[in-house]
Amino acid sequence: MINPKIIEILTKNPGSIDDGIVYLLAKHYGYTPSYFPESLIARMNRTGIYFIDRNKSLQWKVPLFDGVEEDSYSWVKAEYWTMFKHFGTDKQGNGNQCVRLMKNLFIEYPDIRKHEVLGATTMYLQATNPLYIRRSHYFIQKGQGASKTNDILTWIEAFRNKSMASVDVNDRTAQMQ
Image (cartoon, rainbow, N blue to C red; front, side, top):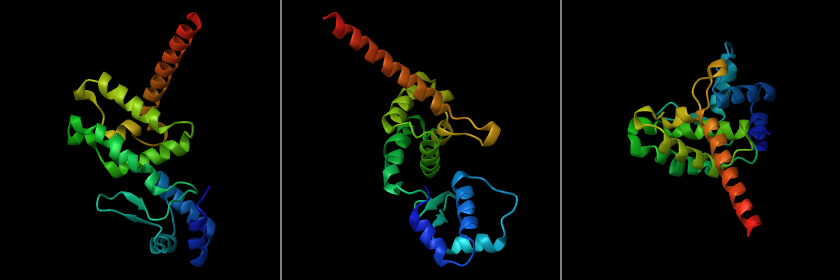
């Protein structure tokens, strides 16, 4: 659901609220439609809802979705992103992009949990030859549309299977006693 604060800001600015929401959704998900009126782009840039940082990454001053606080993703840089540091700064990738892609991942797959992401990432880093480790943001998502890949989803599934297997073994052991 779109954050009510976004609706409030768009209401105070002249123009269509719906056009503004569609524009913000396109920005959030990284899509570049063939046409947006210059007047809409200028209007949205003046709202102060978002800004582009020095790394040319989109940063939200007001969260786009209701219930998604920007601080709730601080763990992405603090925990997830730093896991790749051991393999070199080229493997660490772009922290801001990691946060943006992780937000998209959690929106697209709401059943995923933080501990699964961290556990799956640990499994991936331990099982993969350091020469072939992807950059942190590419591990979350690389490409768009038909060429989009989410390697992290494969590893989350493996992490879940491993977790379920250990629960099954513990259940059988408890039943035998």
